Length: 86
Image (cartoon, rainbow, N blue to C red; front, top):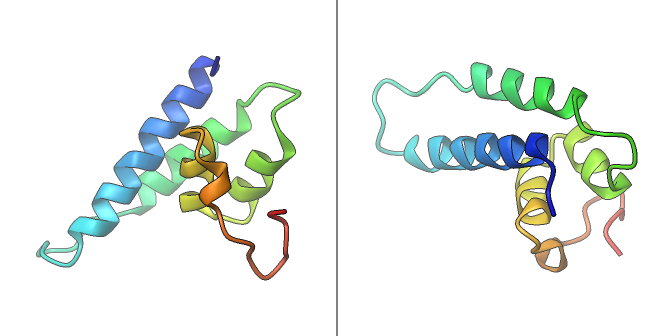
């Protein structure tokens, strides 16, 4: 069962995903910096024992991978240059 900070993190990652997808038609372009700051702040409050894979995704700013992980879809993640995903 996800902890509250993970739920808030998933919400913020979903908002970021929607904002990025909407950028094609948006004028002016949305300011993503507040979303990045919110995600970073939420990541600081993850409990000890948080899965290292999630921490890795967030540290590397692999927000799509972090979102899929929190949705229980980590198997859809592809290995990046660091080959972290097994």
